[in-house]
Length: 303
Ligand code: RIB
Image 1: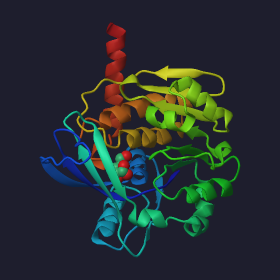
Image 2 (image 1 turned 90 degrees about the horizontal axis):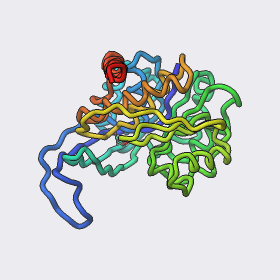
Image 3 (image 1 turned 180 degrees about the vertical axis):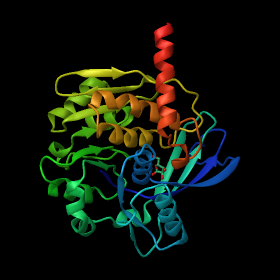
Image 4 (image 1 turned 135 degrees about the vertical axis):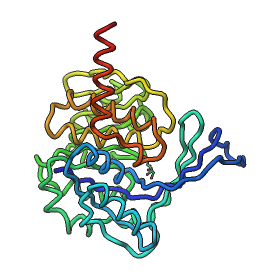
């Protein structure tokens, strides 16, 4: 079983020619509403591949909150522990440019109310899962508390340090796998060299680091080695939630595989998520992942 403790948002996605500069006004081409939030996206990504996933977090008392809960339940998540808090639900306003790049502004709403008391209430279940998936869209002190209350060996913990912020106060020794992108790794380690930056974080306590590098694939750094995983080539339409697809698929695959065998599934999921619009609607099912992985093997064997 996978547990995800994290954010649940409504995404308002505006399609634009390019991301506006500060102070500039530009016309958008369309607006659409999707379920999102890094926590919920990662939970849905794993559930879509067949994992049993329990989602922990809070929605607000508005219509968005009710809609999000229904959607997540229909997607196959266990939503029994999601609480409804008085006030607005989390909201993200996302501009997506023709190039596929995006810019995201978040209003945390109920996500900011995921606190120690909530974690304390659910600690027994959280401590009993196989993999615990975390991001940084709920208060950092809640993550801090959760990591310090977990038993020392179980579950395996994956932390996606996004949106990036200082993690030095966290119990880094309790993080089995940190999954920053290049930008996040640079900010967390102070190094723009992937292997050196990852090694620095390992020297501070994190057990392993996977740095996702977009069109350059991903790099797994363990205490013993740094391994490069090639990217899958796709034409990106919308990069929103590509990292979430990666993390959710990684958690699913890591349940039954070695980390090095799980990463190609995560790379494929991340690449495929960029080929469709929206966060959760873009998260790929297993057959699409297997198809793109097989195509690559065939291409490599004919070259
Ligand atoms: O990673 C993409 C997500 O970031 C969006 O769904 C948005 O809600 C923000 O949390």
